[in-house]
Image (tube, rainbow, N blue to C red; front, side, top):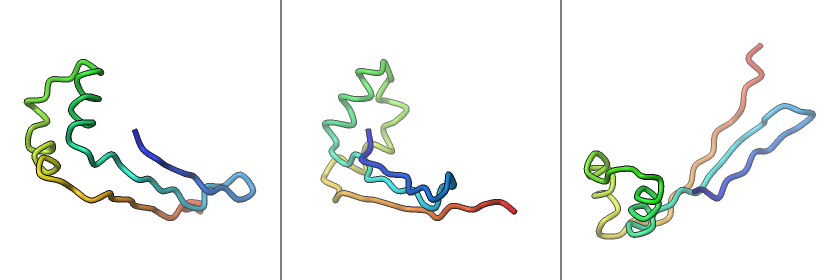
Length: 65
């Protein structure tokens, strides 16, 4: 789950952003609740095992003209 947003202007996405889940125990629980095996995710989950600060990102939109 993310805390996320989309900024729209006149129906066009201007930017989007999200804060991702960073707590190891929550990530493992969410994966198990979705029926996912943790083993294929091990290298990703290991990044969070000893603590990871909250992270967020944003990106600008494009009209694609």
